[in-house]
Image (cartoon, rainbow, N blue to C red; front, side, top):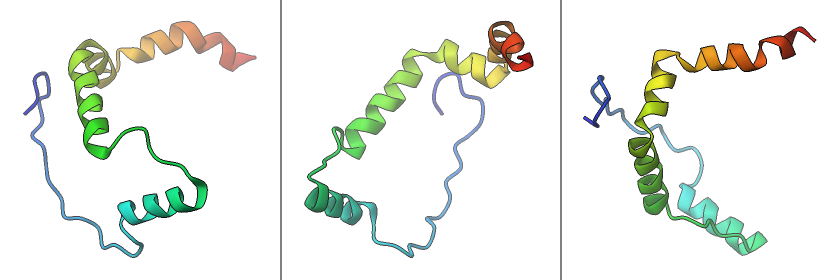
Length: 81
């Protein structure tokens, strides 16, 4: 379990794949449009996990609902217009 998280991770089975795997769709995008992702899945997921670990206060505020106070303070009047 990651630091600061209180629930165990639950693994689930993959969904059936009615379409080609993502790697095949990405190669088609590259062939047809010349586009390639800036990150691989591996580098992207590492950066994502690192960001969450480095920003645990943000995670805790979201998990606790504390961020709603900020939204209410900063956006409450805008909804009334």
